[in-house]
Length: 161
Image 1 (cartoon, helix red, strand yellow):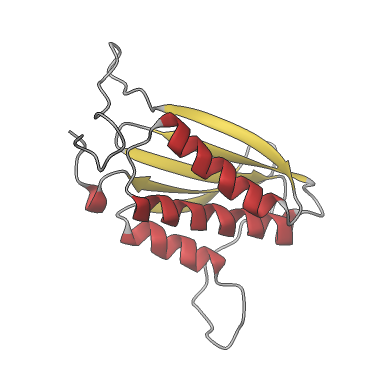
Image 2 (cartoon, rainbow, N blue to C red):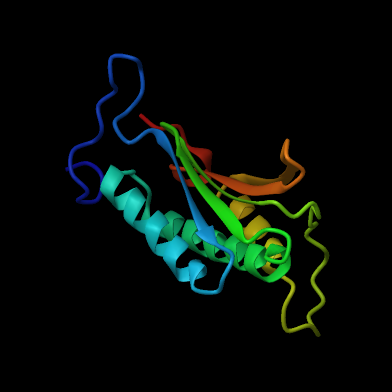
């Protein structure tokens, strides 16, 4: 086994895709209980699909999901009683996003170390950058927003073979 015991390396499909590629989306109520549920759903999806992601990357993705869902619950629930989590997996990357119907587009501000909260998006940005990925927030067509982070499956952006 060439990939840390996760089974044989995925072989490309006839269309050039590998078996674990795809897009999955689920909705959840904008309540505190949705934070661990979303994290567990993403973890289980990655495992079920056989995504060849190192444990460190998976842990980073799960922390990102937790932070983004927490932000949607805390800051958007009044205008958005449900949120959507999307996981998109390509041959060389994985992208997680959280969408809500609140129009406010947050920005990651400089950290105020005297505060006990408010640094979730900074953490998301740092995890993404450290992994060689990126993150952003965008408006949706219906006036809400989606916040996403995309990380390479191979450390430091190394190309998948």
